[in-house]
Length: 313
Image (cartoon, rainbow, N blue to C red; front, side, top):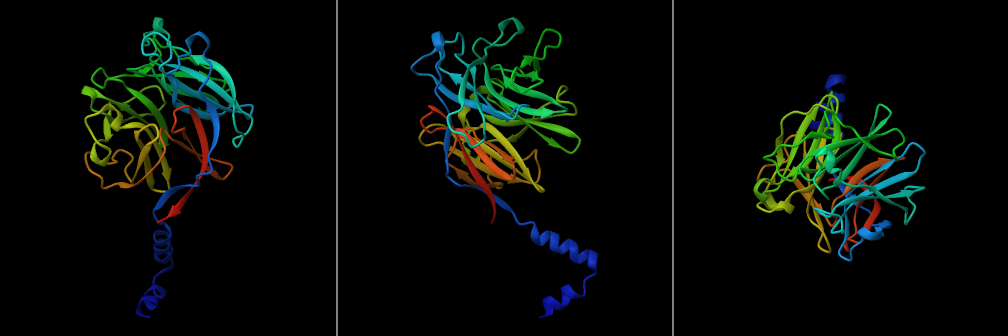
């Protein structure tokens, strides 16, 4: 009774503020487990290998409404690090078995890219232009497209690289979000085989700040390059959710962290950890008022899609 009387006597602006705080309950992602396969282990012709695996990928909608998927295929007969990009196209987000479109991009060593080092494409559309960030084994590079299908490297002074710190070896797995008046790029690097997730900021997706380590160690482990992979960050209200993969394959696992600071998800501690999901290399996105999650098949023989929800704790 006293509590109700206290609320009734609050000024209206304080009451609105209080109700806003009460309504802003923390959210947790929940998988619906309604998976459908959209990509398989592709035929690469002379570059095919029985050991090859589709791994880190990007998924986006092209200007003609079709859905595009490019995946890094590793352990192929490609020279060097064995990796290249293969593409698929779907007519609808809920369609199964998207059409294979062939090899989409290979390393260009004349531009300084590492032989066979193509890794983790990620695509956004900004100011009418599709922008693809990708790894070339030690750098994050940029390619662009008018239609979201045909991409060309953006070369400046003979180089497509946006950044790459020699101390942050195997720089890869880039993705970006818009935050206030800047962009944040999250990515992985493995100095001395000690994996961590880093972030850089940019006003224009071209000029990037120095790096800041934003996630490392804790329950996910440290000291191995695969303990921090495939970072994916989603903002929901005032909270930022980091999806951090620590294991591929049949025992695939991704930890989820929630923080109000997009530059701090815990360094060798788990105060922001809210759980884990049995997937690897997820991309999380909303389309037509439905949330989706794309990830690798546990068999590493393709890529799957499913729906998900954000539920109050």
